[in-house]
Length: 108
Image (tube, rainbow, N blue to C red; front, side, top):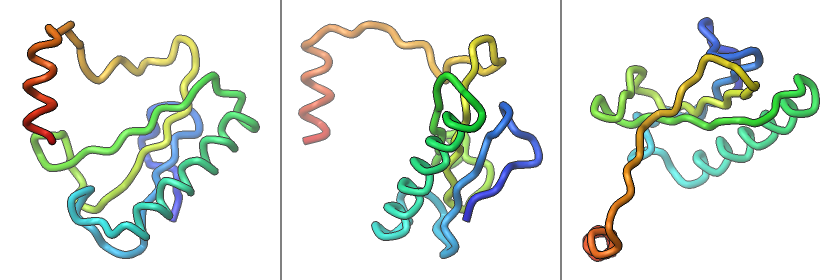
């Protein structure tokens, strides 16, 4: 299911939501997740073609620490325009390769 939120971040901002309940990314089934991402691609294509956006950002949050406030899986498809008021979600800092290897080992 797709709809425009009451407080869109930019013109054409759309939410994509599975009909079957899942709390977040940790709970959603593979079939529902696939349907959501394919719908998001279709929406992004329409946003680019019909709204002439210059880019698209996808945003999906999980659990309170990840800034999730609505506990039903949903994916924001946000058209991006030069000069829009959206800022970067984080400020990255370069990390030594040795530290990256430690992180990679923990995830393997």
